[in-house]
Structures are given as structure tokens and as C-alpha cells.
Amino acid sequence: MSVKIPRDPSLKIALIPIAILILMLSLNVFLFSDDSSYGPNQIALLVAAMISAGIGVFHLKQNYKKIERQAFDSIGVALPAIFILLVVGALIGVWILNGVVPAMIYYGIKLINPTIFLPVTLVICAIVSLATGSSWSTVGTVGIALIGIGNTLGIPEGMVAGAIVSGSYFGDKMSPLSDTTNLAPAMAGSNLFDHIHHMFYTAGPAVIISFFAFLGIGLFYVGDKINQEQIAATTALLETTFNITPWLFTLPLFVFVMVYKKIPALPALLVGTVIGTLYVGIFQGELISKMMDDFSLKGYYELVVNTLFGGFKSETGNKVVDSLLSRGGMSSMLNTVWLILMAMVFGGIMEATGMLGAIAKAVLKMVRGLGSLVASTVGTGVFLNLTTSDQYIAIVVSGRMFKKAYDDYGLKPKNLSRVVEDSATVTSVLVPWNTCGAYFSSIMGVATLTYLPFAFFNLLTPIISIILASTDKTMERIEE
Image (cartoon, rainbow, N blue to C red; front, side, top):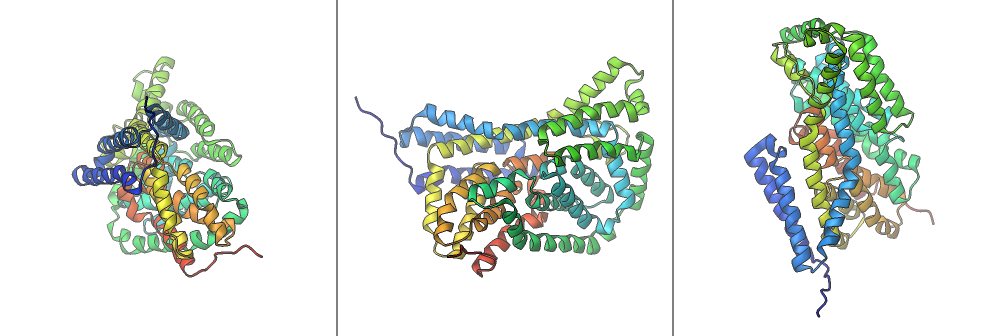
């Protein structure tokens, strides 16, 4: 009886599923445009996963059960993200119903000068993300309000979303409370605060350039396109529909304090959602009486539960306001959950069959100097975000993969941890089927490829990282 001996994949074999996936995703973008993430990309990922498994079983003679088990195990990595996604969907719906999001939009329109709205958006998101250590919490709270303000001011949503992404990721990278900011130095073997300090050399110039880029866009583009009549109509309608009061801001403030006190994001958001249901009765009694025709505890419960899973439905008759506020609910996140599941299955199979490792080995063979070492690290981080669809896997794999190479070059571990963050962390949000890209796109209601050209910070950081390495600037050596 012959025994099947598993074989290691060659580089050519390993690239077959990647090539097919890229071809199908490109075709989907061409045919379906912004709708490509609403089904076509999920199919592409599933087909690529099936091809990967087929190569593993029939060509590499690997055990199917082992491949299947690792594929499903990889879904476990994404489960925290999926639960947060569902909770944020519920939170958004109930925060619109209780007036928190309308209040943010109302006061934002009143207080923020339209010409400086984009750089102010970047700064606000950077501060909130720095304080909470979470870009996800930032976009799920102030982010959706800033999208609403930008839409009211007539600013293209791609620009607004790009400013939100840029600010959120800068704050996340600089915060000692951030999970990715702790994970990168742990993988590279560096100190947390040495790592944060070292990131200023790349993140600092990137965020400064981004700030002035958004300032320039605001001065030379936005200022001439503000519709004052639309702004006045929107604020008036928000006032008449909701009870707008500064007291509503106590709820998001409470959530930010919980996250700042290192309460994990999921329970903090759950508490914010539960308290949000109480705020509905406290602040929006008149609104819910109109929505129910006749107030009762049974009707109140049904309204809140419907909003938690189905989102808020605005029916003011004003298209701008209705498009701003008709969002949220757990059900609105199910398409994104589907995308994440398919992506994680593909990444898990690529890793289980060894094809991901084969590509990694080929990358390491091309390293010829300091510049190419950092460029290879950046390229690997981007590649892993494209293939494994999860920033945590990208951080861990690239950190482990290049640790010895950085040691051989006599570089301090904080150089590796910085480059890993400059690539694996910041580019994850630029990939539509990555957990981060899918999450941000779903929460903001803006397609990933729409905001990608304006996510200046995320685009600039890896480039600056490579330039500094090529010129041997800020690359600190281990002392003899």
C-alpha cells in the first residue's frame, strides 16, 4: 500500500491562486464598480480558496481534513472583529434614534468652518484614536457623524472618509493602548515606548503632509462648493425632528472613558449600546411617540429592538437628511461578515498548504541591502493584508519572518517593529476584503476604493519608511 508523501509547493504553484484571485477581483471592480464587495468579491475569494485547496490535495498530496481544519481555525482569528462589527451596527442604529449622532452632526455643522473641515476631521479622529487606542471605535462613533457633516457640507465622501482613516490610524499607531501598537514590538522584540518614539520618524512626516494636503483641498476646492441653503435646511430639520442637547454627548464620552481605562472594545461598545437604548426614552420621548402613534412599553421595546437589528429609518422627506440617518443595525453588517469569512478561509488554506510560506521564502532571497530589506518587509506586509485578509496575521507573520534578517544587519528590533506597523497595520484598511477595509467601508458607507486615494497618511507612511531606509536615516544599529 503506497503512502502519500506531502510535497512543499514551488513559488510558481503558490502564485496560481493569487493570480486567479487578482484577476477575478480586477474583473469584479471593472464590471461591478463599488458594488463589487456586495457579492462578487466574496465569490472570487471562495473560488481562489477552492483552487488553493485543490492544489493542496491533488498536486501536493496533502491531507484535506488538515487543510479544512486550519481554514476554519483562521475564521476564529476574525471572530472578535465580527462581533465588534455587529455590535457597532446596533450601536449606530440606536445612537441615531436617541439623538447622539444627529447632535454630533448638528453641532459639527454649526461649529466647523467648511474650508477647514477636512484637516479638522483628521485632527479630531487622531485625538480620539490616540485617547482610546482604537481606530475602530473612532470610526464607529465620531466617524459616522463626520461623514454626515461632510455630506451636508457637500464635500465628496471619499475625501471625508480619507481624512477619517488618516487621523484614526495615526492616533492608533501612536497610542500605547492600541492592540497593534503592542503586538508589533512584541513580535520584533522591542520595547513599547521605544517603538512608539521610533514611529514618529515615519508617522510624523506622513501626518503633517496629510494635514496640509487636506487643508489645501479645503481652501481650493471645498470653499467654492458649499450649499448654504442645504446646510440651513438640514440643521433646521434636525432641530425639529430630534431633541438636540449637549447632554447627549455624555454617552460617547462615557464610552471613550471606558476604552481609555483599558476596558476591551467589545464590552465597552455593548455597554454604550445598552445605555443608548435608555437615552432613547430620556431624550427622544416626542420622536418615539410619533413613530409609535401611541406610546407604550411594548411599542418602545419593539421600536428599540427593530432599530438594533434593522437600523434607523429616517422618513423626513428630505433626501439629504434621510440618507444621512437611515443606517445602522446588525443586519447592515452581514454582507461585511460574509466578506470577512470568505477572506479568512482563503488565507487559512494558503497558509495550511504552505503556499504562503513559499512566497515568503522567495521574498527573503531577494534581499540585497538595507533598502531592499525594508522594501521587502513593507511589500510582505501589504501582500499578507491582500492574501490573509487580517492585519494581525500580517503583523505576526512579517514580524517573525524578518526578525533574523534584521538581526543579521545589526539593526535594533524597534526598526523592524516600526516597518511592520508602517506596512501591515496602515495598509490593512486599504484592502476591500481585509477585515479593516471591510469594517471601515461598512461603517462609513463609503467603498474602500473610493476613500483609498485620499487616505494620505496610510499611503505615505510605507513610502517614507522605504525612503528613510534607502538613505540609512533613523535606522538605529545595535551597539557593539
